[in-house]
Length: 210
Image (cartoon, rainbow, N blue to C red):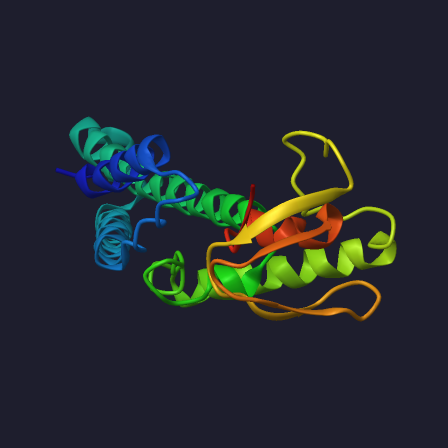
């Protein structure tokens, strides 16, 4: 029946918003289902156009059965488009949420490995372009006042003190802190550092407070 594929797409998208958390991967882009919906929509459009050209305006105004059938097809095509837009809007929202949850770390989001959420395999090429563009836009926006405020810093609770004890839970490599100090973060090591300088690594899961 017309619209069944669109309903299937929206239902799956809705379920993902209920069950997906920032720690779980974003569902894979449903390309086969989307292509099937687009094909159905094009077929509906072709059928409507052919009927209108074949019967003409006079027949359309007199044949109520024909008008009813064309109306159903038209509404089904519009519904398919709305389902596709709803699905894409939900995906965009999920991509943005994960960018913020990762503290604006694009390399972290698109990394690979068992311990890192790999968005690259779940996103379509267009969504990857959107993520990179969104990242560049936010980086450009916050660069003017980065010395005053980091928009990507966690705001769940204010820091209790300026210094914080952290333990490295994943190798982060060498990091250059403010003032030029270089720190090699190896798994298992502990440090006492200014929280403002390691906040992003904590958000991204490389460090944890102890």
